[in-house]
Image (cartoon, rainbow, N blue to C red):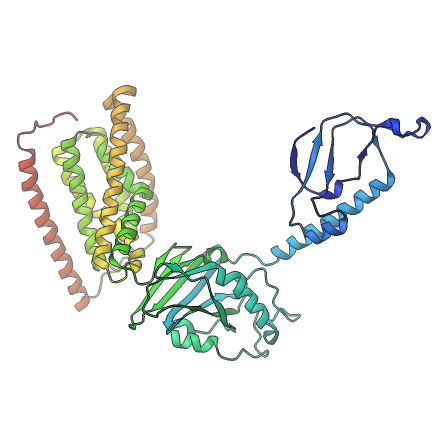
Length: 520
């Protein structure tokens, strides 16, 4: 016997039936063929084509491969039945697929949500584009306009299938399993009621639009009110939305109105995982430590710069001096950026990204021509200031998850960056020592590896510089805001100068007694 395997159709079960040629008289025996054949059978509980039609392509058919030579009787009736069954399979299998693909996945979807606890009930308001509800055939007229008066049942089905199951709400870390659809309603694309809770609630619970509104499926908005029973409005609430599958690019806006009147607004792409709407300090701390580690490990340009620092100097003394300088410097600009020190101009982020790429090129070239670690720490400090601004761009996107713990989250993110940086050093230094000690000479290896890194950095620098020059540079107006910003930058420069002076004094004591130009 052969091996069982999935196959495309149970309808092939009897089109070609194998029989021994001793069962027929010799004068009645038709032409026989020797071959390997497949015996197909219906799944348990399905014995006829009518059962297959009811499957609608949802069951996996199977068969049995028999590698044996048999005589095959070509029965005209069986062949006819085979053809009919194939046609039926195509009809019940392909037509549903056409119905599904008739509604394509939207490119950009914006989901707006508002949460507020009132008494023993948590109201969850959601607004999504109706075109994201892909498997629901809403009633439409000939020209494609929605029949609004007949749409309520379909809207509730859409909310039950596409919205409620795609979000999990938590009260004091316990998932809220019970919910009900309180109201559904179509809205015009020009409606702006989801800017605040009262307007949104009033809109969702108001009477439906008139059929006189000529509203197409790809223009309409679906508003939904979902109610969750809760123990207390003062509880701690969290949300885990999974709306990413509604579109190719899904942006979700979450507004949470705390019982004390404080409103928190979150905006993110994709699914953020568990989002604590009013986090405690330790929740924010661990979240931002993880974000810092993730950012440094995902930032290839930052990693390459660190490797450039490590290639020529791998002993403890140089590593401590150089890495500490880089860490102190990027911590300064990261913290300064979090408190509004970043220029609010479009060209600043691409400028920083270009300088980060340039830092890789510079360090790699310095590795090739040779450098002294007693001087390199100053260069590492300068480029650390640049990389700190780069870290701040990632931090600015997630600070919304800090709640009321800005400083804690900021320090935690910076700690996460340092942990990730330390992990790279612990991993890279032994590898470099092994390669330079057993595979290739240290000097040749330094030149080759640095040349590769310089090549990568040069491509990034050229690409980012090309984007930078597309921005227009204009002198700012000499007003109060300009001079206030200038004073903040001067204060930052004074602080950086003081830190650098202190580090020079400390490093001078640390380096005193060391051998100048000692090989690493």
